[in-house]
Image 1 (cartoon, helix red, strand yellow):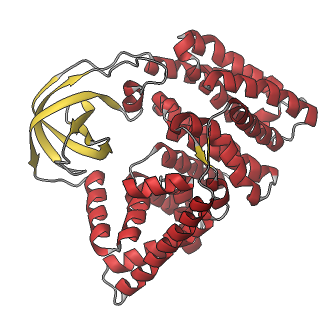
Image 2 (cartoon, rainbow, N blue to C red; image 1 turned 135 degrees about the horizontal axis):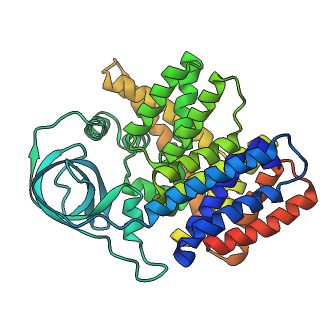
Length: 465
């Protein structure tokens, strides 16, 4: 069982994902029957030669998978929080986001956990301490398969229910990460040029700028704005360049950055991957990138099983798996962008209605361009916030770097304004491509790869589509 030797957590992640995907159809049987069957199936599909002690390891990993499965079922099937009435309750606004034409606030209450509230005005900022009255309600159930699942969306963010809030008043502030994000966002808005401010607020504090996201959505490069492995990787690469591989210092910087940006699922996945790599170095062991991705995915699902239905979590994990498998298998970096585009196509096209064709071309050089742009912009912004002489002139040069990108990308979009809509063939191909690169990473024989691709891609397509 080659997968036991190189990436056992991949089998665990695959079986848990299959169980969660079939939960709506099979209920408890998805976790009691499907999870162990998929786990054993993945193991035996990758069986090529005997490995010493493999059956003991197989039994141990199966038990671990069943425990994870029980944890996921217990959380997913748990009833929603009871409705409560708040009177003069104190809480902290941890997030404020646009929600159509209104705003959604996430409030961490002092006694009952997090609740979401909606307002026509952004009355409070992130980090505000408030006192309020209110009443909560349960999440609305889905009406059909394509309907927005309010419960799974918010429970994936550890929100217990929806709250009607009134008589709210702001209290004197205390230090919190949310308040720190807000203050940093304001400083960037005031002291840096417009475009640079938008990009840095996305990279530094995870703030979503609607016009910027709409532009990058047309270009197929919106992933460069969501804090993910790209941003976390750039930060850690720069830190290692300056201080070397000092595990404790890097760990502090890593998690400080992730929580400063809001701890999005994609950033958490990247952080866990890097943390596993750092810890492996302490013990003198080689960390397999694919196994690290799978391990991070399993940890996040154990922390919040509802993340399985978060599109950002799914795209982050399957993109990272594809990139890791291709790098480990020795493929050229020129093939990574088209491959990732094809692998993520089923999820992106199904959720958002289509994928910009121009994105495949732009993503060949966009990561390198933005690695340079974010590094220079961050250096310049730091000088500007510290009020170094002539830093404002340097920031105008940085502004030109982002303007140049928008001109280049806009020209490509005008020349290639095509969108590839969801279709069965491309979606099926996307499923198969991911399986192919994972099999190549595991060094399976060609006939075995063909068999695994046929069986697993069909199963994945049936479960997730």
